[in-house]
Amino acid sequence: MATKTELHPRNQHREGYDFVRLVADSPELEAFTISNPVGQTTIDFQDVSAVRMLNRALLKTYYNVDFWDIPANYLCPPIPGRVDYIHYLADLLACSNNQEIPRGRNIKALDIGTGASLVYPLIGQSEYGWHFTGVDIDPTAIKSAQQICKFNQLKITLRRQKNPENIFRGVIEPRDAFHITLCNPPFHASIEHANKGTQRKWANLGKGQSTKLNFGGQNAELWCPGGEIKFIASMVEQSIEFADQCLWFTSLVSKKDNLQPLNKILEKAKVADFKVVEMAQGQKTSRFIAWTYIKENQRSLYLNGVALPPGRSHQSNVGSAQP
Image 1 (cartoon, rainbow, N blue to C red):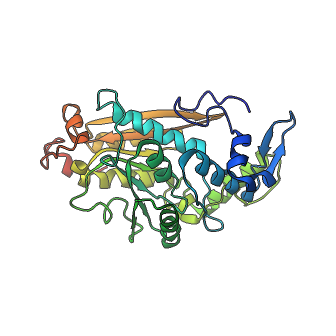
Image 2: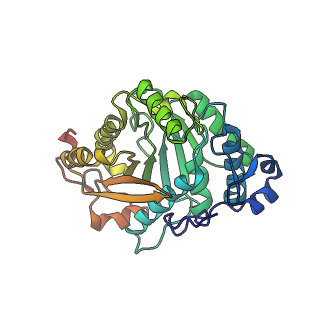
């Protein structure tokens, strides 16, 4: 398949999908392969079962995940884009480590909304050896993630967020110290908006009207009151309380128009630094925002395990700032 030159240089899927290798490792994938109009091997990406089987094969071949499955109708994420987020996070951490990517279980990552697929911890642990804590409000998603960990003998911490109004509160414990947080927030404001977005997608594919999602997704994975902007605003507000317990907070932002209001929210929060990292997968452009309360001259200390006294990492008036 055509080279995906927009993907991160370390992304193992830059050259497209190697179906010969994938089928050799996961023979059950072959039943889902088809030929495109120019004779190349691919799958029908509108087929839920085919997408799930492709993900299972990718995780096995490239990320040493022998068992992977998710409950019916749960979000089945496209792997290459998820991989890009992890690699760009590694680059972000390298900025505070003399441009060397930090590796190993001493690096702590917090995945907000880890989902039934557990995809970010699986990729990040395989690529960089980081220790992940995955958080979700959905007990079924947590159970699925626990099963993936059990069958693959993975040491990933999983925590249930019991209060849907909270993001960091209730899951970041007093003794926790994270180097990075990541999140793929629900970007629709309501179930109606989610369905309309799905219908537009199928219409663009020439498939007519449908509310069927080829990548699946439960309500909490797709929408929340106020949509993406409200969710990330709440994330920023709560991050103030944990300013000394995390080096970089980050979140994907699906809508470019949301960057300007988010920038204003972060200014009110008195963050020490704020970045927008652009990513691209094929014809799609995505991005994530990253913010920190820790001053630049102290970040390498934090990254290398030197605890900072409360209040030393950021301006003393941060706690009173309200997004």
